Each structure stands twice: as C-alpha cells, then as structure tokens.
Length: 182
Image (cartoon, rainbow, N blue to C red; front, side, top):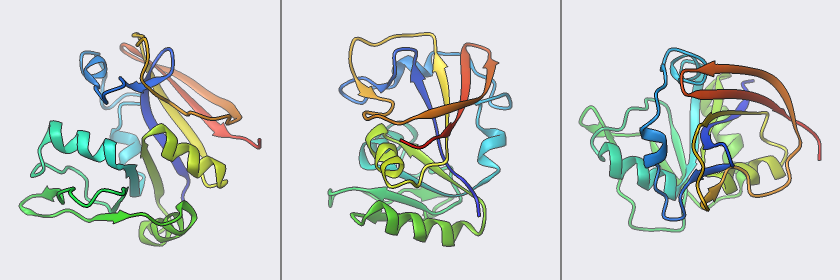
C-alpha cells in the first residue's frame, strides 16, 4: 500500500496562500521540476489525489478548466454545488466531488490508487483532517524565501513531525517529514 503524502509549497513563515487564496508569491520563484520537491519524481509515484474546493478552484482559475494535467482520480472536498468538472485532453477529468468523511474517502482513494501513493494536495485544514484521522504518512514542503503577513496556514493544528530529509532546489528548501504520533 502506498503512502499518503501532503506535498506542497509554503512561505518560510508557514502560509500556503494569502487570505484571498493568492499564490502569486510562489509563481515568481525559481524551481527545477526535475529536482527535489520539483514534482516530476513525486508525481510518478501518485495513484490518486485529494484537495479542497479552494485549491481546486485556484487550479481551474489559473490553469483553465480545459487544461487539467492530472491523469489519476482526484477527490475534491466541497460543500459547493457550482464547481465545474475539469477536462483533460478534451475529456472529462476523473474528478469526484465529496462531502464524505476523510476515512471513507481515504479508503476509496487507496483502492483506486492500486498500491501507489496518495497525494494530499491541500489545503492545510484538509491535510490536518487526514492527520487527525491518522491517515497522513508524510509531509513534503518546499519552503520559498518569502513571508506573508497572514494567510492560509500550512497545517492549522498540532501535528508532530519527524524530519527525514532536507534538500535545496534553486530558491526552495525542501523538507521531508514523517508524521508522528500526537
């Protein structure tokens, strides 16, 4: 069975995005997609993914609803009824909107992933819910050299982590943690 990994980027003071979900701070930073924390190697291990509706909406707003780049099933936690379904290569993406309990969704994701890893895309509160349920195995964070005065926190709760590795990828410090017991 694969691991459930929260793979994300953060400001050095622990914010994923500004209060209004802006990620412009991230998009101005230099990163090698083939290097540590760059994504290429990580994405090759992923069999299913999950995110909150704000993250999903941001991806659609910035990449376009017809430019979905992921070819694995994606669960989107939402209470909204107005989210469009992203499209990949002219076809409907494998997007599954849900309001279910994280444990139930995790079981569905694990079955769909076929032994590959599960990618917790974000946001921080959803990753925290998976951690609270004992369903989060690792956190990989690429820290950018920028701070925000306020915003959406990386993990808005107490989670014990064990540092496994630290690497550098151009502008980013990439830290890999094992999720520990509370």
